[in-house]
Length: 142
Image 1: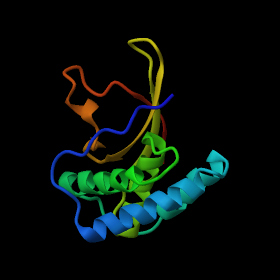
Image 2: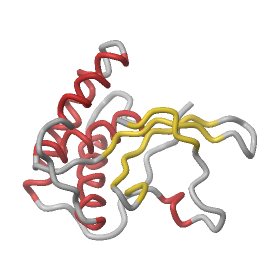
Image 3: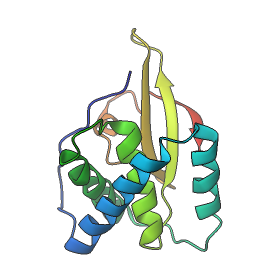
């Protein structure tokens, strides 16, 4: 089970960011057809490049650009696809966003989720504003 994609809020991405988001989304859809260990190996390989850490507003616009590309996709465009797309789009622009997979156990039922993070925490997620903090336990961070 995955969470539905949240609507975009905040500053809108620029045209180059939208193009990178579309590229990232199409690449993510193709990569997720492979076994997960191969996809994570490729993302780890990309993170060996000398990439910069984006500021939080720029990172949020990258996530919004990936979500905007998913709106036009006729198939599944949930958190797994959009988070991987945002990470790939960021790498295409010379930035590093960590791709994370995790789970929330409480309150039931258990919910799986994927997101991207910067050094300051999850990016582009409505759950970051919850009073008790980020509810997901990270199982994989690439």
